[in-house]
Length: 328
Image (cartoon, rainbow, N blue to C red; front, side):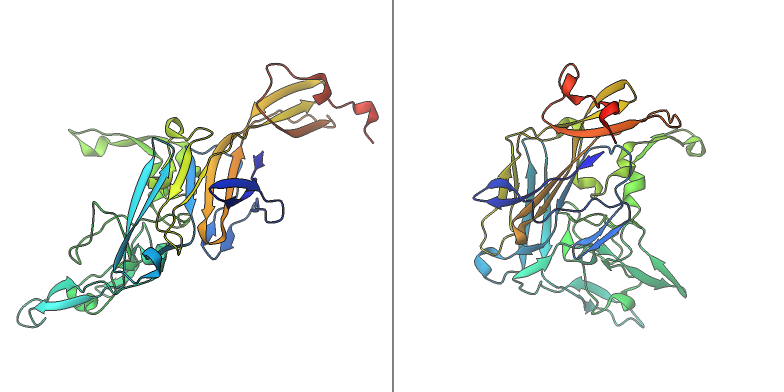
């Protein structure tokens, strides 16, 4: 069961928005912010954090670089360096007798920059007659096999502060705040738990695939369950509003639970927060709650699942039970 309430943000507070729901879909959903994977019946390995939109220069004054800081509660934070358009320029060599030496041009000033994976490191290049795509982000930019191929070509606009691109041989992980592309390799890799044999690497094996495989955010934007923000804690993102004010709100104290009835057998399952989606340009937020349960299918057995607001009670109230004799 998935519940996904939507909100508007006004003066750092959330108000329920019944007019603009964020869909729950069994198929991939294309949006202007990227493709969302289908909602599947599996628990994820943490809370997905999405920031969908653009980075903005302070007060609308063109700049070559801004910093986007994302904070969720007191135990989770991430930062992304957003830089203006750059290209690789030749500063030495001729590519014939001596190898080309390249360096990045100064970033062009910008007012806004999309926070999309097309602006992060990656892409496709040709090496020895074959096209090669960067597995973590095939749709990105900045991947080149040779200096000649890179000359006057763009670098990425979104970078990790700890791993900036200094050479065409660098292969950093792409960074981003939108839904992570379905064809990227970081999600499955982040879900692997390995048994590493430091003596004989051939004995290294996969121990298990963790629930992080079912997360939709970039792995660095997945909040571990033990670090998930508590109700009342602040969610804040900087440099994503044209006027310069941070986009922020307090996480509401919102709880839900499911009542499952199979003939006369009844069960309660709490829903867990597993997504926080932010659209600063639209002053919108959605929260996603989920629970997963299984049951034995009995032919002709009557069954019903009901969503209730609030924390699951210690015992099942009589009012929850369906009176099958009254059902049509």
